[in-house]
Amino acid sequence: MIHETIVTTLNADGGVHVAPMGIREAEGRYVIAPFRPSTTLENLQRAGCAVINLTDDVMIFAGCLTGRYDWPTRPASRIAGRLLESALAHIEVEVERCVEEELRPQYFCRVVHHASHRPFAGFNRAQAAVLEAAILVSRLDRLSADKIDGELDYLRIAVEKTAGERERIAWAWLLERIEQHRGARHAEAVGS
Image (cartoon, rainbow, N blue to C red; front, side):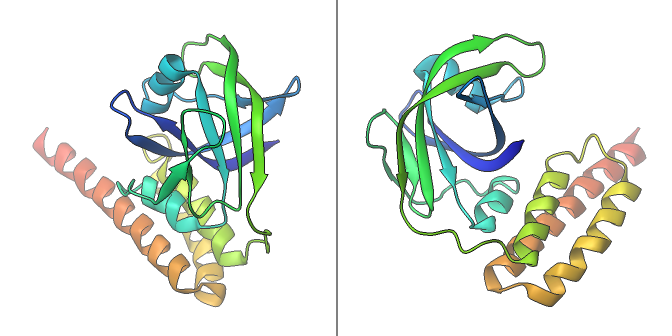
């Protein structure tokens, strides 16, 4: 089972890198598998630790996929890292081993600290729709326009019926990013 989370790592300059990431559990460890190349991968290789943030704030997922990375954080408890202020819970992990793979190395991480900050009330349909749209945006180069449009048409129903202000903002960011991507591809096609 893959859990959609926000992984925070520290850059070499001490800045915080915030990245939506699906993680899974295997062999009693959390497995973080960032794509090559990526900042999360570089930070895991260098620092050997990360914070897995569990949040219901879909603006963070949408924001990170649309160039908005500046989210409030605070220091982690047991590792050199930072966690999201809005995290419902967080898990501080250290890398125990890496299974090298060409596209996505797998970092098996042990838990060094776990804390719950407030209860999870559950996703409403709009939050789940924004999360699914964010995943589509993360795959714009791998999915056809027809596939993306079909998925968005279905997800839009949930947003229109159940979204609050934050979900509407996140949805708009994602739609804007899709249009930017399509505009860039059109410009490439016309220019070639």
